[in-house]
Length: 219
Picture 1 (spheres, rainbow, N blue to C red):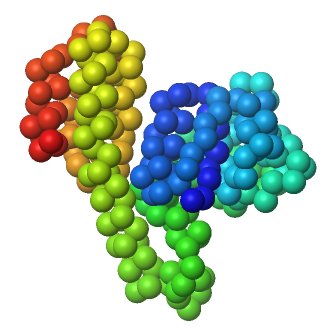
Picture 2 (spheres, rainbow, N blue to C red):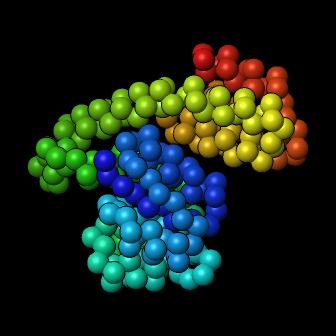
């Protein structure tokens, strides 16, 4: 299993990227800042590093340089809310393959996964077009299968935190599920999860919305 390291001070943004990668079959480690990320990259055989450009404790680009100097051969991807040409140049100078706009989309994830596959879909140039479409379809089908398999446990977590009265955990779990549901074509599930998360942030645990979520998810 390939390993990704996701670095972002924002736990929600970090969780959304990590969740998409896990759905794609990656083992994911998470870090909130550069020091933790550099340490994890030293002790873990990381294949991919996804990081924000601005981190507490230092720029993301400098962190990537440190990881590379320590011998990592991981691919680097930078995420920025509204990447400018300067952002992309800074990221490229640090060894990043690409700078993606936040939030990271399922399409961007498919492109990353394709870059790690073998066969026609992984080749540039002549293999583009129909082969790319086939790889995209196969990867999206895989994402949908993993999403369906993971859905009961995601719903169970929201239920459990709601019963326990843990509004913070409910907000995080619902927001994360909203992100992946929206990315993978389940807008009604995404919408009710967003409402559950918004309620939880206000300290309201809406059991009726959780019941509606189960109905929409069919679980």
